[in-house]
Image 1 (cartoon, rainbow, N blue to C red):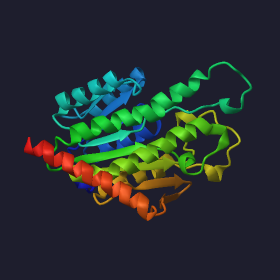
Image 2 (image 1 turned 120 degrees about the vertical axis):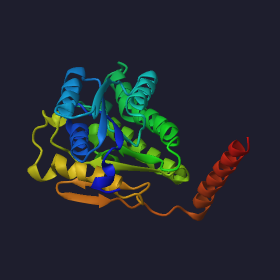
Image 3 (image 1 turned 135 degrees about the horizontal axis):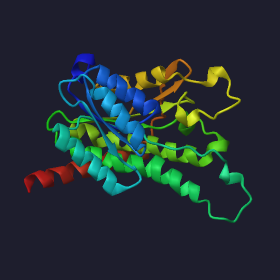
Length: 278
């Protein structure tokens, strides 16, 4: 898929009222795409959609208030997108929050409920979004579609001060890689981007971070478009830091593990064949 091929494509982007999600949406619109801004920040989301639609002959953007930790709100998001634009081509599961305090090292017997919130949004939100993306993109037979999940550089190189956050983002990588084992059967690609600390609203209060640790938002967005433009990329995990982008490599599994993975794959193929015959 090239810049020209993005034209007319419809993308759902969670967490698109600010930061990386907003930047992705802006570039998609600039390249002729249509976007659904899914976020809990209603004022910002509505404003962005209005700006995207200004001086356009048709609606190219809508806002849909969505808490990604709530299954029914995500179903509503996908249904609204299909009703408005008639199709869904790209799903970017980007919404996330971070843990400012390292509750893992606090001496307290009080239940750390903020851990649950991190897991619900950062991990379950991506799991829900990916599941629904498969369900809707499979309907685009034969062209399928694209899923991109936002992980984090801390999923690859964990930082103890953000232990639970790292765990949620590691889960995003595992989900992405596991679903890539079967996604091509449905002409769907699924990849993940792992930004380092990026200048966004989420990091606005960060202090004491050296300049060379930061990534520009444009460099981060470029990784998403690498996944959009290249239909051969599937199960790829891209890390971005400073001005560097790298596809992370993982060791080949031991033969017995590879055998297990292939066994699961063949079992899924058998299930698909049975569904077709019925």
